[in-house]
Image 1 (cartoon, rainbow, N blue to C red):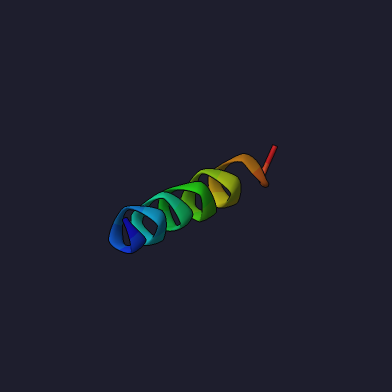
Image 2: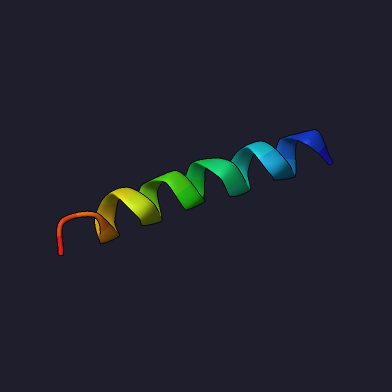
Length: 22
């Protein structure tokens, strides 16, 4: 489940980066 957590963390980071420029 570590890999899933890593992927989820990466996706969250990308989502956050995309949401930052608002």
